[in-house]
Length: 485
Ligand code: ZN
Image (cartoon, rainbow, N blue to C red; front, side):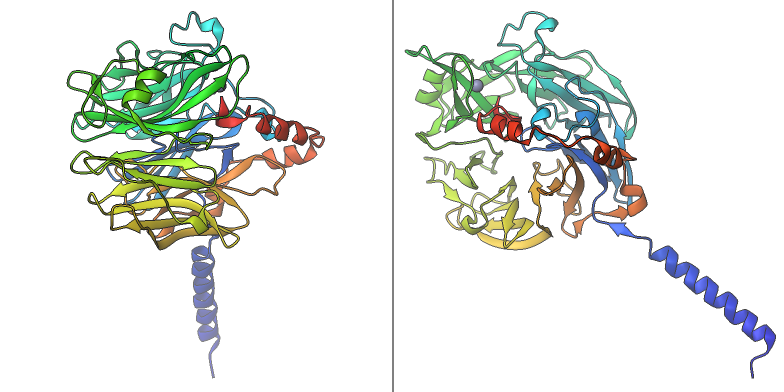
């Protein structure tokens, strides 16, 4: 028969066990933050994430369309942030519930410099006219803003560096092996040149803009203006690749149409540009010279859209371009452009993402897709140079939502390949959970650490219902929403 002391001991042991259980049962969620806002990420503003010395840094649009940065320490298994890193001049207060009210162009792109400082570029949709003469195009909205962390490898505090043009949008960082930073962007609203600015001192100063793709009134037309959408990345050695599509902009006005696919590259040793065959190009490239020397495929009335581009060990480009509901893979085999192929036709809707080249014939693509009522993040692989693609592992999936992709994290850790956002089409507000996806799925965190909305959702619920969903639809149809201008 147990004595009183024995019973007492049992109670203590039981309490300790229960205490431990309740501690270890702290609710974990798969997202690291719930404050992605609007269209918080894209494959166009890139990189969105970089792994540097054991930590993956991610950036996205949060409340007020401001840039937010979070960091995952792979050694400690711990999330830091998200931290508010700047103010987007296009942000609106209070919180909007109509997607047509958001601009989305000012999403942040992130890069870590040689010394470990974290840089963001954000806030631009061509820059307002009040900033002065735009000698490379037409003014737009917002202001291209460059901020940097005050300390290396520390996202807690940020400062603004006034050293890049305010007239930027679709801003993209390219970091070379020697640490040189290139900032590529469109210098204004949709009727503007694509330019770059170069920094050899870790982003503290930048050389003036160099125009590389020219906007102008279309030859022989009073109603069309030559415009472009482009994507840049480091190529083999000291080269930078540019893959792009043409935008025959209605003049006056604007439309959402784009077509054709193009490719060229820069030799950073002398800043010269050439086409895939090595023929030198005079920059800025015009519609006429692009059609003659850099055209991959004339797509006619079929709408093409930017994707990512990487080169293999031989320097040959492999490129994604997006078409309605699908991604097509293009490859230069050394002599010619191979016939483009669609990756996973049955999984087409919502497809976006990026890829890794293992060898000229072996390529792995990590794609956000919709399949069987679920949004998925899937690996696809080809071993025959893209002629056929087979689905590999699904890293992450959720029912009844859509995913928004980014390009692969720079120098990605296996556990943290891609930052994505999950969007529920049924919800009445514009806040979305953010996920960092790797080989083990999403890197989650305790629920009480992942909520960063405060009372925003309650405040939104108390607001009068929006009458403007029809207006948002109209804007989208007219090609005025999001990435279309
Ligand atoms: Zn346009």
